[in-house]
Length: 158
Image (cartoon, rainbow, N blue to C red; front, top):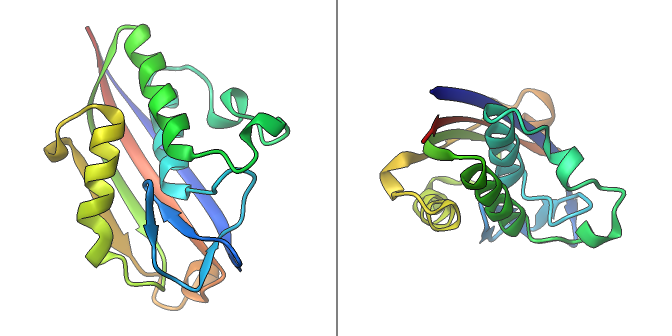
């Protein structure tokens, strides 16, 4: 059986935090605001995987009201999610994701992000696609107020 799930996340950009996307620290003067490390890409992929397996959502598994997840490494949360899927008999077929940000320019970092995600999920690099988009100066992403991400995950039951 093949199943698909979608994930979405958006975080405000603020000063004083590192910008982490897909487990990679991207040089920039602002970072994403959140309870954990606010890695919006890891969060969207986590939700896509949980949704595909009908295992709930990121807030149910890693609530922002739980102090254990304060400043948590979202790549470790994603790794735990992949382990949950494997324990339920699923295999990750592929991930396709978009990062929407006016700045910084993300294309130079996409290979590193893909490699980090592939390592975290335990799947080949050619099964991870991450694309960078701008919002052409429209909306919170276009005004440089936020970064949003979306992901789709395809999984297969063993």
